[in-house]
Image (spheres, rainbow, N blue to C red):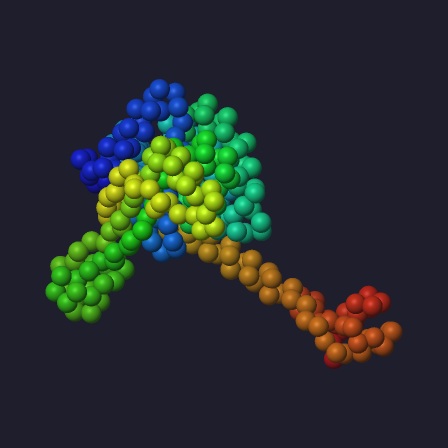
Length: 285
């Protein structure tokens, strides 16, 4: 079971379901530093438990996206009470000045999310990256992941990423990895926003959390499609890097054969020289 039935997380998700039955949508954020285990420790268990134990439906793999395009598709094709999750939302905001784009999309999607009664989950590094109006009016709660514990061998104490046996002593007696989280309700978020108004560095920890808890690293059926999404995201990043490096323009001191200006550059993409003054291009010797 991804989430224990008697856990704080399970009780909280059931409260969300009751709230949505009263014709309200729910939007939450999962925040924390990179590598803290936000997705595998909290997002995937939430999706798994929501569909299997609360909705009694098959788990939808397309409810999770790592890009604006996938998130938009989930909004278009989703059914009532479905989860629409955007993982790596922080990276999407950083890429190509998409911070304002994300906030615009969220505001434009407000009517769709409310009418279809979606359970929206945004995974990002910092709650305060979101538009102030959206933070104040739309977010129902925030999970802050503050600690990650890797798998641990009970024999030698070695910590490692998930494997069937310890890579150091080959022992198979292993403690499962987990993450620790704090949850802040809507009421707590109002206090947090008010107390952080005049602060240069804004923090959630200015108030006590509503709940705190532990979640174990997810190893269920969503793990494989999630890994494929992450790989696709990585491949896209590599392609963007490759595109940039293949169009690099390097300033040179080579004299232009047409106007004899030394204000020239080497263009890697075309493997040629170009003059900034007259626009002449020629192949490098």
